[in-house]
Length: 285
Image (cartoon, rainbow, N blue to C red; front, side, top):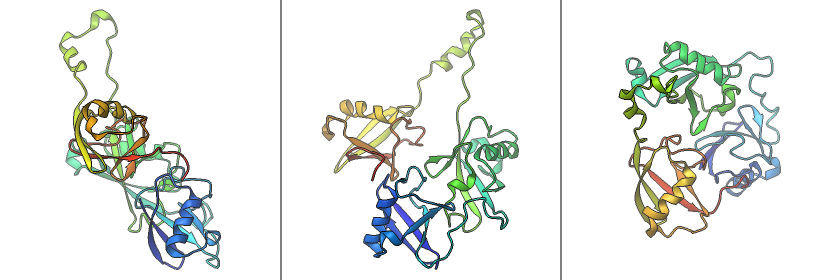
């Protein structure tokens, strides 16, 4: 994935790094491309310095992220988000709804202004709930920055890398989770007219799975967990000749798919392409 680096002097360059690389390995990528010694590099994201042992998952470094690179002589490090007594920064967060019908009368989006350093994700959800008169219920909405789900207890600023809000606006996607199905209070209270709705199968999607030069179209439930996709491929796409030990992982829109998440969680749509790469994803480089 491509990550942009910006120096204190305003120089910007982009480096291609591997998914789940450690910070130390990222510095080595910069050394290889730009010739900057590893020992001279200090990397910062959202005002916090990145530790060499941390990795892209820990710091939410994504495709298109911008990382601040400080070199010897650049002066003091930036203060952490929300710290340092120089006033607060207000970042306009525009929440773009993935299900436009929820806000059909609002153009499919709602805008709220928050103090990114002081506002938690949970509070942002409440503000969105209030601004939409409950059309986006705080208890069921998930906010996504890129492909990362924003956690309720963390500050909004933790997800906004330096330079991501150059115009004062950050785009966050919103996904509304389905409400829990209502159950009858007693066996005699079952409404027979509603049973067929409860028995409906989950939506199915046809995805194009690519393994090198080979490809296969596979129809699966969008609630299929990613790790279970291997079993589906074993029958429906045997001609791909995938490793029998399951030693491969899936990439969707240039991001490693999380094994314990569903295709719906990854927002996989009918006709989309999922790529297969040999190897296993670990927490290292």
